[in-house]
Amino acid sequence: MQTQTTVNKDVKVAALKELEKFIQSNNIDLNTYICPDGNIDIKTLLQDHGMKL
Image (cartoon, rainbow, N blue to C red; front, side):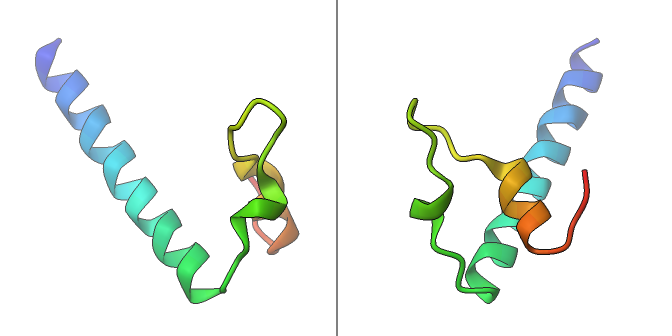
């Protein structure tokens, strides 16, 4: 099970790096997507930029 956890972590890290590139390349203002609890609404951010989850 340890291998699966490592793979999942690697996939998540890679996905977050791609998301960061997407945000930077599109000059997205993250302040627009900050929720009252301080989290970022990734789903709305992506939907606003033509991507569906």
